Image (cartoon, rainbow, N blue to C red):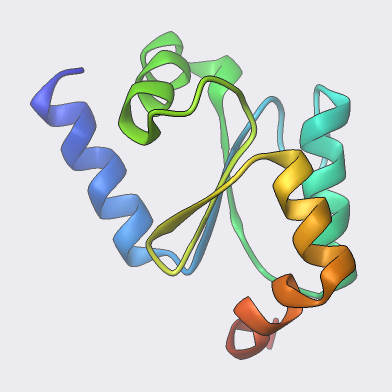
Length: 107
């Protein structure tokens, strides 16, 4: 990964409370796993930034290296890598996701 790409990820994740690297957009997810993450966050009325990895091969492969996580989607909350679709759904079902994002509600 280039230093520029790492800096881009660092800045985006630090500046935005919730970031989802996904296939597609929150309006039009391009895979079921990405759609599940969008649905989970939407259920909690959490605003998030969506990064469509299908738009940029370097971002798609770079985020996997950045997080040391092999799959997409990838969710970052308050600067911390949380995981992918299955982890987000587990956190939603346990109530932990709601606690993690309680102070990030949509205005």
